[in-house]
Picture: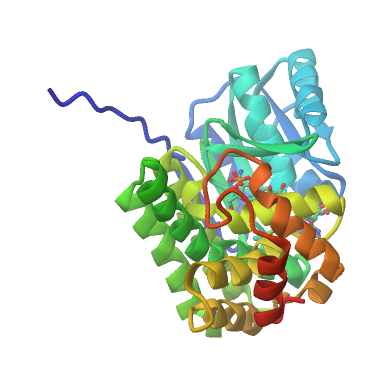
Length: 348
Ligand SMILES: NC(=O)C1=CN([C@@H]2O[C@H](COP(=O)(O)OP(=O)(O)OC[C@H]3O[C@@H](n4cnc5c(N)ncnc54)[C@H](O)[C@@H]3O)[C@@H](O)[C@H]2O)C=CC1
Ligand SMILES: O=C(CO)COP(=O)(O)O
Ligand SMILES: [Zn+2]
């Protein structure tokens, strides 16, 4: 008897484009939500667009957080209960969105994702990525009910945030390879649709790299569409596997070793160069990944990330411990192998 079943949760409304922020309340009223909106944001995004969001609602409440952590999630839940929030509006980068995403699950209310930077593919995903001590949790959470991505705001954001988003997408190449490897070696469930969508998203972004240029609003358009598509791949998979492999473990480890270091997307991009080398060797496609990152203006070296060579090696040799996710790092890469891979690829 066929007894497989699955839920795929996706947003109902996705608005992308010039000045769509002004359509936020219209997108919300389409969702038949009730109650008081609670804006979950961080200081800079609040300054940039907080008033424009608040102006669209009656009696909105605001909570400002400074990091993605379980404490921040608790704070949002507390404020949400205090003000009787009917739904959350997450305004900001990945940290504000992840925090709101997880809090909305506990508050049992929906949330709307309003990214102010095209810097990560958690804009749409049904996962929340929260560090805790020596580990990082990729927590299942409902995806946003709607996404409102205003390309004017995204294009005005510092350019490195957009190149970080590009790198987060390019890292899908190695994430999918790690997922396929785990499927072959560890019988991890693999979704052909999700894997293909994730890979195609990376290919399309690289194929459109000519239109990704500083100062062009069209760049924000191209990148945010890829971020949405990658988030959908995660929702189809029901895990972050299609967009997070060994290169993400490397980045999560860097976050522990160098708190407040480089941007998430930039770290996973550099990680991808090395893990692609580990997958396919000297003649493999690591040069294509490096060149694509370089063309878009994302870092390709330890120096570009502002970290030491030693930190890169420490992160590479310990990244496999961060979570139970089988990747090309297996049960650990030796120091010699890590130095060889990072040196050959020019990362150190
Ligand atoms: N849940 C998921 O599926 C995913 C989660 N993530 C998570 O997202 C986080 C990374 O997201 P980021 O956006 O890189 O970090 P972030 O949220 O810390 O934002 C980076 C910086 O950009 C600032 N910023 C945002 N919009 C701005 C604007 N328009 N102008 C000026 N400054 C602006 C923020 O205030 C912050 O200082 C990580 O914690 C990562 O693990 C990343 C990918 C997927
Ligand atoms: O960053 C992500 C995908 O780009 C989410 O991945 P994690 O589950 O590793 O946090
Ligand atoms: Zn990522």
